[in-house]
Structures are given as structure tokens and as C-alpha cells.
Amino acid sequence: MQRCQANRVFKRFGGMLELHGLLRRHGYKISKTKMALWRVRHSEGGTDGLIPHDAIRAILRIAKHYGFFLTDADWNPKCEPPPKKFYDRNITTRIRKRQIELDKYLEFYALKLNSLAAQSEQKER
Image 1 (cartoon, rainbow, N blue to C red):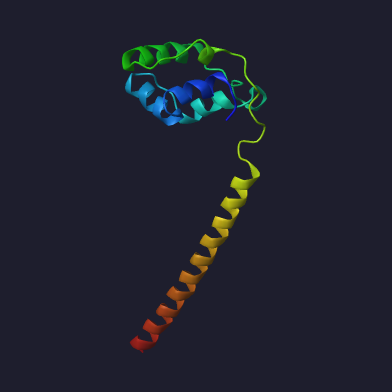
Image 2 (image 1 turned 180 degrees about the vertical axis):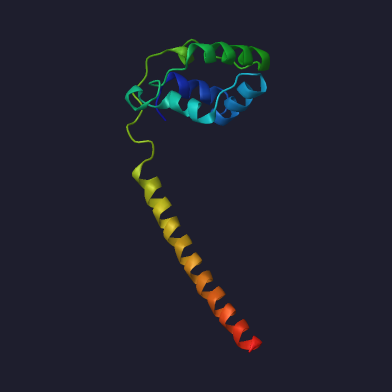
């Protein structure tokens, strides 16, 4: 994970999904997709790892309410740029392998269903 403002704050709250749940519970309406864009490069539609000001206010209220300790270093806007690709090669390779396995299962069950349908037609005759 890159060292940027968004990732540091997500880590303090236990992850992006946990922070999203707290934000929604306290009335701050934001989608998970929009929060994920906080980690993405500006050229790709993100915020370069920076959290928008209105979200910072809501996060500070939540941190105070639940007793989360956020340091000045967590809010430091300087960060390493987020990676260009969202997924690394190993993950996409695993996804492809899993897709091939699922295709094999689907093909097997389709053949099985066809043979069962043929057997039931023969019994009806």
C-alpha cells in the first residue's frame, strides 16, 4: 500500500470499508467507489491520495466521537504517487485461472444436464 493521506487514514480506521460504514452511519453520503478514487492518480479520475476537505471534516468528527487517534503525519498531503495499475499481475493471473476453472465446471454441468434431459425424454417415450 502506498504511503498517502487516504491510505494512512483508512489504516487508522481499520480499512476503507470500515471508514465508509462509519461515515454513512453519521450522515455523510459517499459511495465506496468515490472513496476508492481517493487512492487513484488525478489523471485517472482520482485525487492523488488526498482526502477531500468536506470528508476530512466528517472524518475528524467521527474520530473524536469514537476516540480514534489521528496524528499530524496521517494528514500530511505529501505521498508517493499511487500505482498506475489498480491490480498487480499476480491477482489478474489468479482471476484468469479461477475463471478457467469455473468455465470447466459450467461445461461439465451443462453436459450433465443435457444427458439427463435426453434420458428423461427416452423414459417418456
